[in-house]
Length: 325
Image (tube, rainbow, N blue to C red; front, side, top):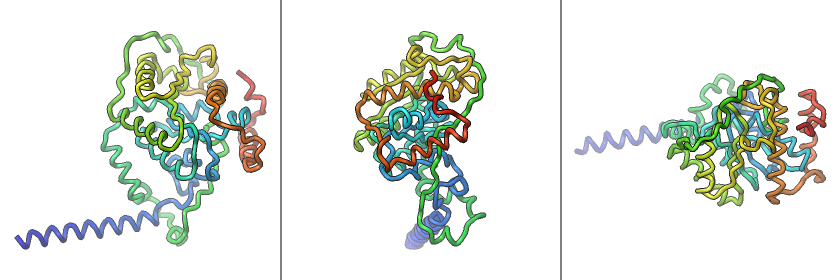
């Protein structure tokens, strides 16, 4: 019996030593800034970490539908609202939650907008558990950084310096017309929302409520990813949890998307021309909430004007493009 206790104690001691070592290695391998060279994973979305503290009023969370559909600098130019799109390809809600938590460490958004496409993206709890483990021990995620490790990585404090000039929006002016024959065809069906996804949305809602932020569910235009059965489910779910729901796919007159011109990949995602229309409507919605104020005349926000100039210059655009609908 005593031998059994000794073996158990040794096993526990081994695990504790392993975790201590793993924690130490994680401190070294963790990115010391949010640049592409160090961060590697979705560095554009994590550009929000480089924004000055408490300067982002609207946090946008979602997948590629979102970073293709909403132009934060258009909201800045028209309303003086500051927003950032923490969106990434194929994003799952467990990853969305991490963007939310990381952003609120340095920001206090008044409005959080959750793009609904990922509410229907299936995942297992194993995926979520692995992600949580990577958060606790970043060495598991950034293990390949050992190749470029320097002494500075051992002693340097974390300093987020990277700012994305598009504030998370990824520009495209490609045009590939979409077929719309079955798009938003009337239906009384309801698409399934898994219990896991429902739980994560409710967790996000609770977090926002506890931090004084208004949660909004929003479906951006997409002929390939959206339909009436999904609309019906989100509409019912939004009513159940008591949040606003904006379905841009049903707002044909308010958001006059031309599916022959305003999509970059046959209806999957919008291009800049469609994004301007979607953003224009969102701006009007945000104004109606009366939760935001303009920062256009505040010298502390001059960097947003600089970002706008850079965005226009890099993409060879004129300011007047934001007036086209």
